[in-house]
Structure formats: C-alpha cells, structure tokens
Image (cartoon, rainbow, N blue to C red; front, side):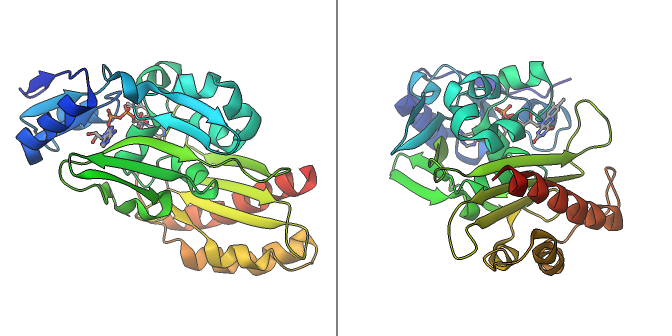
Length: 287
Ligand SMILES: Cc1cc2nc3c(=O)[nH]c(=O)nc-3n(C[C@H](O)[C@H](O)[C@H](O)COP(=O)(O)OP(=O)(O)OC[C@H]3O[C@@H](n4cnc5c(N)ncnc54)[C@H](O)[C@@H]3O)c2cc1C
C-alpha cells in the first residue's frame, strides 16, 4: 500500500515552481513514477506532496536540429524518444541504452529525465548521455542553469539539483559526422533487469590515429562514470587489441564495483573488460 500524500498535477511550469517552493523538502516530483512509486511503496521517503509534471505542456517538447542537437523535455517518455526518427539516425547509442530500460510498458511511462534524476548507479541512459556529452538544463524560480551531465551526479541516488530546482530538459549535441556509438548491458535475465554492468561507447573519427574514443559505465561505481584517462590511450596509432590491453587497466582504476544482489565485485570487474573489448571491436570495425 502507498503512504498518504497530496497529489497535485500543475498545468504550467510556473505553477510547478510555486508548488516546489511551497512544499520544499516535503515535495517530490513525479514524471513517469516508475522509480518514485516503487520508493513510496518501500517507504524510503514519504513526501507530503507529489507533484505530477506530466500535464505540463512545455515539458513534452522533443525536437532535433543539427546545430542545436536533440532536446528532450522532462516529460518525454522513453518510448516517444525511441520512436523519434532523429534518435536512431543521429544518436544510436542513446536509443540502444534507452531500449534496455525496463519493458515496453515501463518505457511508456518512464522518462529520460526521471532516469537521471533518480541517480541510480545503474541508470542505463547515463553512459549514453555521458559519451554524447549531453547537457542537463535545470530551472528554478531563481533562474536557469545548464550543466554537463558529467557534473550532474553527486553520489548514489544524489544529484546536484538544488532545493526548488528541477530538470526541464536534456540537450544532446549532434556527434561529429561518422561517429559510431553503442551500448552493451549485462543483466541476469534475458528480459527486463537492471544492469550488472553497462558500457556506452562512442568512436569519433578525428586525431592522429584517425579516431578518438569515449567510454562510460553504469553499475560499477557510486555514480555512472566516464573513463576519461583510459580514453587517451586510443589517441595512439596502434592496433585496437594493443590499445585495449593498455586501456583496460586504466578503466579498472576508474571504476569501483561492489558486490550486490545482481553480481559480485570480481564478476563485475571481468565484465567491464569483456564488454569494453566487445563494444570497441564492434565500433572500430564499423568505422
Ligand atoms: C519494473 C522496472 C524495471 C526497470 N528497469 C530499469 C532498467 O532496466 N534500467 C534503468 O535504468 N532503470 C530501470 N527502472 C527504473 C525506472 O523505470 C527508470 O529510472 C525511469 O527512467 C525513471 O523515469 P520516471 O519518469 O518514471 O521517473 P520518476 O519515478 O517519476 O522519478 C524518478 C525520480 O526523479 C525525480 N524526478 C523526476 N523527474 C524530475 C525532474 N524533471 N526534475 C527533478 N527531479 C525529477 C523524482 O522525484 C524521483 O525522485 C525500472 C523500473 C521498474 C519499475
């Protein structure tokens, strides 16, 4: 059974901020509710007010323009994002990652913004957003600010969102022409499950070696992480397997997997290596 709370569904963004101001720490935003309802049921935190943002029209914007990139409003569902032409055309890594979240019914409610605001280390969209160098747009009554997604996560289930502030949209810049991206997720079952390890990658044609590489991981650290140090190895002009041999020990220092119900620390450490090699071989050959 759910605890008792006031349910409020504002129609405008201004109304939403008034409610956030009025209820402060006692309020929780609800987008798709696929994380929030679970945490309410578990009585992890009992808010006095639940503010449903799905009726706020401005938050449903989904648009793409080459220069500006992909703009994803906070109320856009994952299924809508997945069925949007520009997603598969320009951002396959994001599409692949989003398609692994829950099942079809979950994706009919769940949002990308909710996935990152929940700040689970296992958030599948996060590695994709990290390698695509997305920007998170935050708004409060005091004003707006935009931050790189890399700076958004502050710890397990923690973000840098200030009191009265919400994510209004996520902007994803168009990757350079010829880039190849992908997401690999290891899970316990064939169907719906959280990641034991998730790896997102983007290979961008540039630099001395003709390529630069971006790598990011889910479920292997308190927050989703980008492997910036290891990425530098791929700037060298060497065969991929040699580069991987040099990069993997650096990736291993970047991540800090733990043992939990989904997998052991050692198993996760091995998966990081296996999935990184597999993903980069796929993306490398495709270039
Ligand atoms: C059966 C099941 C399977 C799942 N499988 C996966 C999976 O495979 N991979 C995965 O990553 N996740 C999974 N999830 C988790 C969940 O579906 C996703 O994290 C989803 O994207 C959350 O989006 P939502 O819109 O439902 O968020 P909500 O539940 O509405 O919100 C999540 C949190 O973010 C806050 N919030 C929401 N929107 C905003 C905003 N705009 N600004 C500030 N704060 C906000 C809420 O207050 C809440 O704390 C699963 C959940 C279920 C129930």
